[in-house]
Length: 212
Image (cartoon, helix red, strand yellow):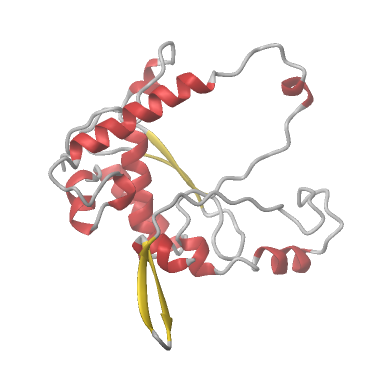
């Protein structure tokens, strides 16, 4: 699992020879917060049992997952609300618009089709951070013990959210150069980062390069 997530291909070696196959995919996975499926505050499992359960996912694999999201229980008023959610068709339009920005950005690099495929050179070119963001990243790397791999993935997610077009009717503050990046668990299952950053000089939805 780690090789295709990291390199986009998988190599199979047997006595007769070695074959390499393309394997670019989007991994979406889910797990319960505790062995009995309840939230930690409601679970009958001990803290050690919960920790052992969360540790079934290895640190190297967890480190290769871009977003770690905690999903809270749906509240009663939300279940019974008559307010309709945003249609999937509208969400799809914004996804397509973001992908088009990325295709335009990497039009001269056919092997890079989206932000997730950026290498270190592209990350430095398109994901420059302002001073405040750099300080936050420094805090995350040192105090929260994020790895070098997590550093690259956080910046790729940041670039993607900056490419995301803003819906009409949202507050003005939402349309500025902001994004939220979430890596809510490390290999020990602890919440480690839920931070607001700024891409240097790039308004939300811009397809140009970030400026340092």
